[in-house]
Image (cartoon, rainbow, N blue to C red; front, side, top):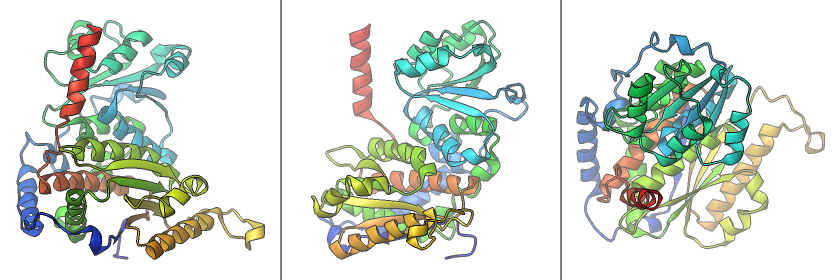
Length: 399
């Protein structure tokens, strides 16, 4: 392990999965894409600018001082508008002293739970929609009836243009933070969309945003290059079309849902794509493992684990006083041994430190890798035409 390395990346993908139908040189193309990204990091109108150490957020600590008093915070949004904030909360929950609720679906029971809370005025609501027209988000806001003139417990994040949410801001004179139009929802976690909630969680956002380009210019640059090219080859071959996130880390659950959307929406185009499936372990050892190891050979496994937990004081007597964390490691190692034996491809991500910098590294790594894979196989990783089609059809039916 390299000194100060927070995440260990391992790759076991056999050559038979990497044969290219198209013999174009991915090495040369990767260099061009990397150069273009590094140029756009300094472009204040480009998504990659959010990875710049000098990126300026559309708020400062003084703007949000009056909101720090709230002990309960409800975030209302859909997809990329909320998944990143929930990932931050779940990963760093031990550091957070406030209660956060995430309303990310049309869920009558959850709405009822929130409405039944006494004194909604003592709850901070963060309303997030890039377009400002997200039907589910607007519907949830409407059902809760939380918006009043000059409400002091509401923050709105949306694009500054003619849309329902921004019109509501102007009409009701609500606290507003602009969502940059060039930053797509699933790539927005390191912008105001994720950093406003993170700040109110008491998280050190400077540490969260530290060294976000290390995968391109630092010690991990060869890891990013190697993995991006291999995955692009796999995507072109179309032999492996399912990614199983086998997750031995409960704190990582929400991050993987964020990652699921990122990969599915960015690369699921032109008849290509990966289906990301989140599989909690060791729980799924007892339900899906048989299929994983002896079923169709169309899967690539991402195995997420952590190092032995030194704070774990548990002792299981019938297992010679082994700790719970040691049991998980043994189960993970046994699974990987079977993958190798059966020639099933996998990648391993082992997390050493559960802090802001580790999470920032995970966010930036997968954002870079996913966008680069798309560019390598001539897929636009930033649009979502099929999603927009369904949104338009839904609006036509309802209106």
